[in-house]
Length: 454
Image (tube, rainbow, N blue to C red; front, side, top):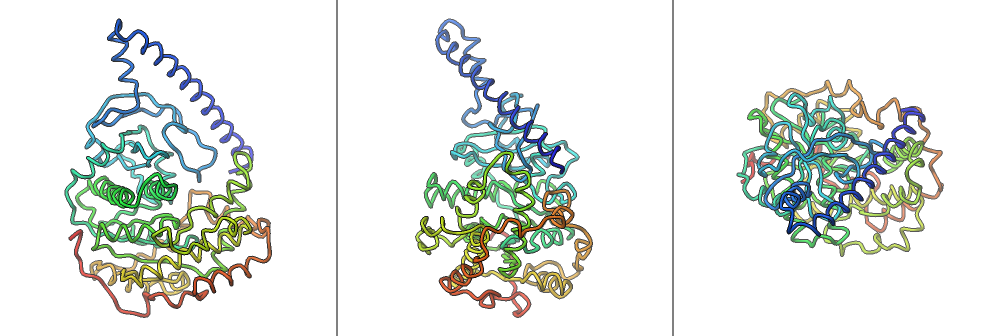
């Protein structure tokens, strides 16, 4: 995207926000009038109810007339990024359609949104884009919203499905999108690449909107609804969840709710990961200053460290005073260490997680696939889906090879001392930079029985 195109995108978003403010002001004024005269005007009262955003036990189907956000990488929410018109109130199970998918949880945790696309559009397909949350925003024709209790009731009503669950945890910038697209090529497999409903739940818990019990229940309900929505087609037998790396602490909750899951942790060495993320940040920053600032971008890296649950662990790494001293590459390095120590600690607690080095994924694809096939109990006749290697896994997104190839990550480095910080982090976490302490998929012969959800 050129600078002029990005300027247009930001300008459109600003215009949409202005229109929303005017609409909200008009709605508030109208509501106050209706409140004053509702005893004399029952029809107006009924219209006010119809225009409200939620009804207990029902979903609000709304047509999208306009959507905008300042950059494709940022999240979108119904009340800030869409101009919507109410179509009808629907039963909660209306969302159980092939062209409807779970989108997100509101910032206050009170409502849930789904996107609807045209019937012939598959938001899960990598041909539409590498990340589900971006594809949903681009392709949705309608939104369905419902309050959190209605969502919970929907999840509670769903029967268990005999579907194989594979979870791809990762450090980020490590080939996880490539691996997901390898799984996608297996017949009967559907991939959920970075569903941001799970990230929304993480934010709610980290900001103490949700207690531990409610958080665990929400993650479980999100999984159940995703499974139900994405397996409407009877030929879908395997689901692959690839969460954002920030969601790594959730794999314990996901395995608790779905104990038959296969969990793979894909990682890359720290130095290469930081370098790759710095190129991403450099590409993003070209345009980000049009709608945000460096402080807000740093906040992403300093907040929500993917450390293992509970939040009382590794308090030194969560110390605000220490965090504020870090440069951007140091903060990225701390996230890498936090992700790695989360997986290490969970394996020590008995979780069956098999770990894969990025360099092995790239250099030994056939060997890696055979090990993955056995670990995940895929059919023996499943051949290695190597076609994914011939494509840019990030095609169609701002992380594509073409974009990053023209970006110099060194321009983003605010400190050349980040390697010293990395050494300190590794020492404090008792980690080695190549993560040899983790159970290596290629070094051990392990598998789990095909248990479905039982």
